[in-house]
Image: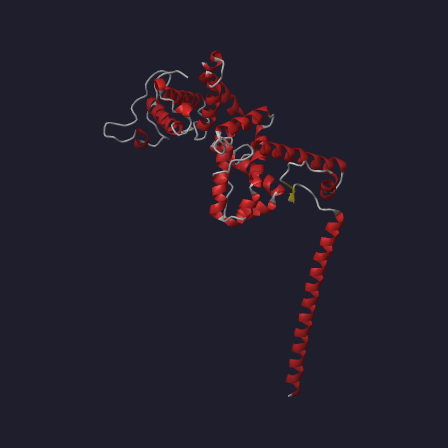
Length: 349
């Protein structure tokens, strides 16, 4: 919880953020072409600080007035992000990293064992660095289109949504909701902005225990969309965007169980089709879905209707099609007969 005064990096107070004329240094020169290392450091620190002071702004942990503790904790986040960005210039600092570091630091600094909590800053840096080894591609613009980049991960997420809930996917497209409007924040902050902090910690416990964090995040994100599907389907552009950008408080245990069940069920169905050589329809009728599934393969709760019902519905569709065809034939016949009568009358004159 202790540390140098707010705004210090490594114990050294940073240069002033304003020049004598009152103009902010960051706006005085484009960040892409600093003249000196000192100016580069100043630009980076300014960028980091702007985001750090917006990290969990309602959390008392970062507002503690006693001994200026809240500001010292924010200063710890600044140091972690500043040092990491300096040592990883291929990635640079990107907004969203502050949310990840802030959550990690909060948990570690709250450890009941003081011999552990006093090293929260160093431990947060270590964990953040280890995590970035797995997800750094999301923050690298040159890898945006790769499978591991942000656009690639959004595409994989929407492909999964299209597979399991095509109705919602089509509705969001129809009302004009681009996936990037909500999924960029979801994926870059590991959903830390979507839930209350205790729920984020619970979610991350499960995510860090997963051997495939990207896979875990994708299934949770798709399940989040399907959980609120009824409200989305009833909404227009504004209503859908509000729901997705200000996600309603969920039952997190149910959400996690549902996403896990979806992954297991999809794996079972895929295995049955590929290894067992059976059709998807046969697999869906043969393998009972877990009870916690919201949607799977376009089916409510993943339950395929009985064969008798499918046959009846197919018959009804065929009947409607035949009736429409007969009506078209009759209409065409009447039109042809009318044309023939007109022709004969014309020739009889």
